[in-house]
Each structure stands twice: as structure tokens, then as C-alpha cells.
Image 1 (cartoon, one colour):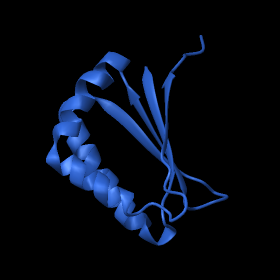
Image 2 (tube, one colour):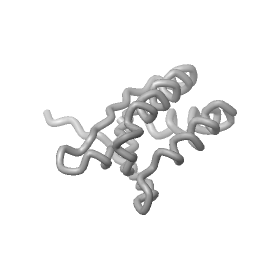
Image 3 (spheres, one colour):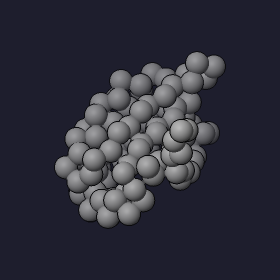
Length: 103
């Protein structure tokens, strides 16, 4: 499995708007790729979020992400998402991982 991990800070008072954006984005993603996404909120800092998405393979991710990014609605959702980021902590970190199974 190929895994994308994003980390960012959302303004706490905008959590509901964030979750609605993620719901809409998930609908768009599901049209193009079979993926499973988890959203994690830090207990120690409620503005800190992690988004973890599992894809069948990196090839599958690359194939689908280009199509997804062409969607006008996803571009609009990303602009809305950027407006929810915590002031002074606008950085979004992104990392790639390969899931390993323990036998």
C-alpha cells in the first residue's frame, strides 16, 4: 500500500467547515480512485490535524491524482481549505510512505 500523510493546523472554530470540505473532497476522490482516508486531531493541540490516505499503489495514486486535480470543484475546495488554516501555521507538510505488513 502507498500512503500519503499530510499535517496542518486548522483554526479550531472552523473545524465544522473543515470536515464539510473533507467530505466533499472525499466524494470527488471516490470517483477516480479506491482510497481510505483517516483524519486525526491532536489531543494536545486541537488545531493540529493529520490526514492519512491509503492507496493500492503509488502508480494508482499518480494516475488518479492528475485527474482529480483537474476538477474545478477540487481546486475551489482547496482554496476554501487554505482559508481555514491557522494563522502563522499555514504550512502543510506532506510525506509518502509504503505500508508494511507484519507476518
